[in-house]
Image 1: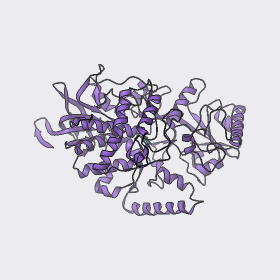
Image 2: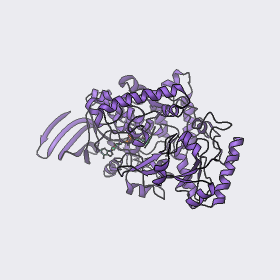
Image 3: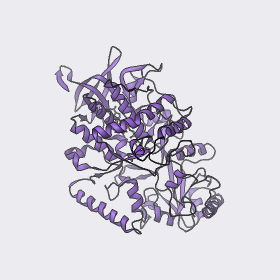
Image 4: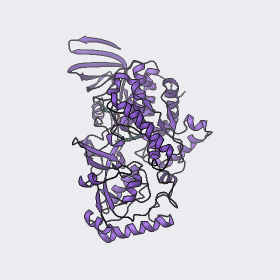
Length: 572
Ligand SMILES: Cc1cc2nc3c(=O)[nH]c(=O)nc-3n(C[C@H](O)[C@H](O)[C@H](O)COP(=O)(O)OP(=O)(O)OC[C@H]3O[C@@H](n4cnc5c(N)ncnc54)[C@H](O)[C@@H]3O)c2cc1C
């Protein structure tokens, strides 16, 4: 990178500027560097990683080389059938086809040339088993654990995960480990795992603010960041971009402020927008998300739509409005001890388990509780049109919480007092009393619970088919028969927890072409302006095919953008 000072401030010249340091932005900068370009990542927050660093880090890549190594040869055709059916009429075919074509190439390239490694989740089925071509596993990939100590002093620049998703005030565990630890009172192997993880964590805490054994999205971001550091790609934080620079109709850089200095970054090959969409911007949410508009999000606070504003100011267009313009988690809300708000996403640990139901304000179920988080919230909005279902109430008994936990409450929590006292959780000794406390008709909730208790005996949910497919069952309790997702709610105390729709990301974004170039309303690309991640209109038309489809999309279009900027032939 060349630097020089002018009267108006500093000028840097590089090849590619990337705005945003999530998995999308970092993957774009890394790919650019691998192709011989100079790149720089600009992050407007103090910490690196965006929502990606808070996430589970799963990356959905059909037809990946791990699947091929297992002898699966036809996944590309199957994934094509799946997306054709799921996305039909909602997203542009060419865009999801570009994803299918390039996701395995991105994965192989970053694995081979930059050691960005994953392991396949062979038992993580796609979310929409009702569509042809849905896989039983193998498309979602989990980041390999990363030792944060390898980052040296830069470890402190990495964003921390959501505190509620860590144990013992800063220890990360994978989903598989969390499932194993649930059995720590019954299995010596699980107990030993717990002891090992805790031992490492306690040693870490002597020197660090949190554990250094990173997993999930934090491991993915840390690994990308470390690779950039090794390749001497700068990542500037607390740097605020004011406007995109344009010359002869081409985007050629950005003006920004860093530590009170004005800096112009000239970019020979263009600018990549990777700001993570607008989940954290209340006025964008009010304009584009369904009512009642979500007030909270578990996404990173920096995802405020500012990159979208930059693009709109140079003539870019947003994609077409979708069904709801967001990707969703049902979340419960609490106040942390420092007064900040905890948004706890109910991803997979409780809803699908046996002995939990979700009801609307009328005390009636409205959904198969085991569907994906995205479909669960969509069902809340649909149901709300008929009878209030926002918030929806998760109902269970004490035995359920002891076994599986509920939201913020960990399994085997000895006392629920603080959750009850804070109003996070409601309790009563009969279902009728619980209903009265929630302001719903007692007979309705009683009859709903009695009916589901009957289904638990037969194993068939005649109303919503909870546990009726592979995806539901993968998150149930395999030890429970006849249906791993159905169990009775029968032993007092009885509990209720309210959940709200919260966007984990947004699906309405900048209109782009298959080369990840930002487009005008006419469909014409804006030379030099690229987009990836949640800044880009969802290639899946706002649908959520399986675990990792957001990060899979982000990294794939990041890779495409950088390849194109480097002049690579993507058709080869
Ligand atoms: C708890 C949780 C778990 C999740 N798990 C998964 C999962 O396992 N798999 C999956 O696929 N998806 C998951 N998601 C969703 C996924 O994390 C996001 O969709 C994804 O991280 C978006 O990546 P991105 O690169 O577009 O944006 P981000 O990772 O959010 O990064 C965007 C960055 O850009 C910065 N930025 C914004 N504007 C500017 C600007 N003007 N200048 C400079 N910087 C700017 C932001 O501060 C932020 O750091 C999860 C989400 C949550 C909340």
